[in-house]
Amino acid sequence: MLKVDGHDDAIIGIGEGWHDNGAGRAEVLVYSVEKICEKLMKRDGMTYEEAMEYYEFNIVGGYHGEGMPIFLRPYDEYDLPS
Image (cartoon, rainbow, N blue to C red; front, side, top):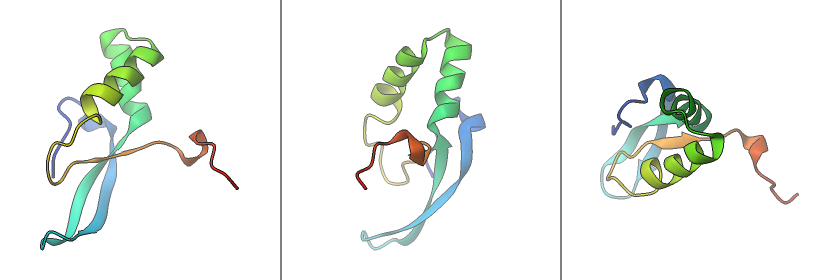
């Protein structure tokens, strides 16, 4: 499982899934986006907007290989069609 350096305190669980690459069942770490952004704001003095931009570009913005973590946002943050 891949980890996000410096954000162990934002881990909220382990996600399970299936991979078609022959590996079968796989587990990945699940991080709270909210906890990551809160830490960036507190530790680095960022605004919420700066923390989200940093998260989107530097943390979730690229593929880092098999076992990449899942980043969870609360379901109610989205405007989903009914």
